[in-house]
Amino acid sequence: MTFEGARPDRAALGRVLLDAGVMGEDWAPTFAAVDRAGFLPELMWPFDTRTQGAVAIDKGEDPDAWYAAADSDAPIVTQWDDGEHVGPAPGRVPTSSSSMPSVVYALLRDLAVDEGMAVLDVGTGTGETAGALAHRCGSRKVTTVEVDPAVSRHARQRLAAAGLWPEVVVGDGTKGCAGGAPYDRVLATVGLREIPGAWIEQTRPGGLIVAPWGTHYTHADAVARLMVREDGTASGRFTGPVEFMKLRGRRLSLPPHHAYVPAEGEGGADTSTTGIPEGSSSPRRTPPSPSCWGSGYRIASRWWPPRTMARGPCGSTG
Image (cartoon, rainbow, N blue to C red; front, side):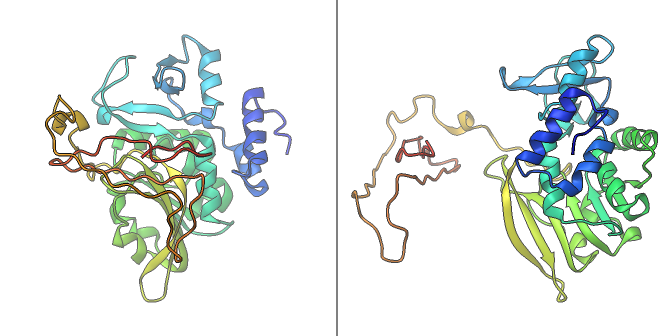
């Protein structure tokens, strides 16, 4: 696939996704047809890896930088503070975004979707993912749900401008959308802490649910790929780590570490150490290796300070 006619940076990104195996050849025509830039607002905040923060870019002021960001494999914030934020400076909490293309096409790969399948897309956002699904499956086969009316309205406009017409619904994504059920596939692009029962109920037996899932102990997620069974249950495996904005209405605000760790740190605290003798192993477990294992805890009455458990190729710390 040569991505003829695409902007140089976008064509280069497409080749990178193909070469890395993130995007299959079957998705390349969709990547070429559904341009991320067509779904982004004039003012946006790409993530800057150098500063580890979001930087405002206005298309009217710097179109070259705007397109460079649109054609990069970086997440881009498109809304702050549930739409209450105004101005170019970053807000407090990012609440809608355009995900990294590598993440989007990895999710689509995991979805194993094909032409003619009915798909529920939860978390419309910019509309790009719904557009990719509509291009692949047919507009009439795709239903996309977004809780924020303003975000949904922008996505609907951008989809129409691209000649794509999925069913765009404003509502609570945890309830799915019964009007388009049953679905062959359900895809979520928001972080979850539980899989809604409505999604399982609205998916055909043999259908797949692909969604970022995690716990309240961290902001990180893992992609759960679940198959729905005849008995109304769903099971599967994790395909890889991701991190998504959490489903609106299901966010949990946990106190930061410094809110419950005393300023003096370990000073005056009861401490204990458990050592693991070198070379010790159980016959039932994997023998020791240069890799390492660590565990972290967030319990208000206890503090486990970070410690290097072992160093190997992974360079991990516990």
